[in-house]
Length: 235
Image (tube, rainbow, N blue to C red; front, side, top):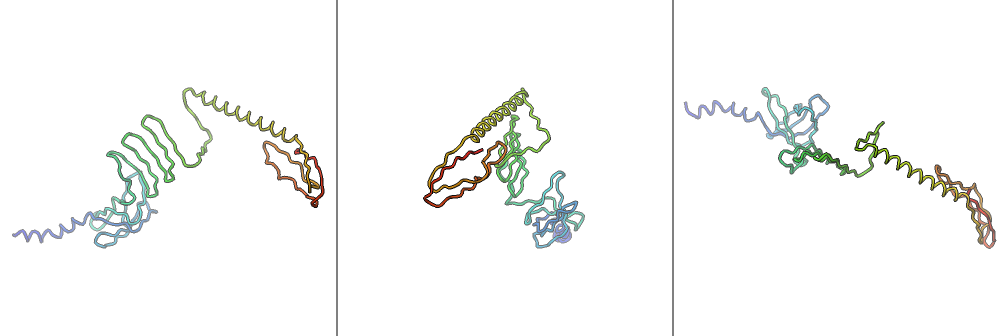
């Protein structure tokens, strides 16, 4: 038998084997199921629906539409996707051995070659855990702690207590100074003279450390040319 005979005999098997693994493009995603389901288009124009997308345990992702995928035939015609990648969103320039978790929206976690971890948000805020045990936190906005108890450990721990007491003392001193100023302000008087002033009416102005200053009293002006003098006490 000639070689051509064997080629014709094995060609169907060859064609089936060469299409076991194929490139595909993700068209639609259903992430509501226990196993993510995809619609993919294969390189020859064939469209497959309800293609299962297998992902590693502990990691979940929803690849953008038009991501590339690796389509694998299992048990004949049944197909699954075992990998997906979005070229334009991939985090690039990693050093050998480094690992990163990222999204197309700019957030990422990098485990670098020095054993350090960097968590970066799209807004630029960053948490940096260094190899020597130090940590650096950089935020572009406010920092809020929502906890029943905040424990600070250090050597000596009494330094934290002393610092809190010093802050409390300084705040008490500032409050006392402000209260002294307010008392002096409330006790002072003005002599107001001038042309065109008839009367000054309204409730007295009282300044306290815990309340806002009321609006200024209303002023009624006499016709031009008249002269008046009034004594005003801001208390």
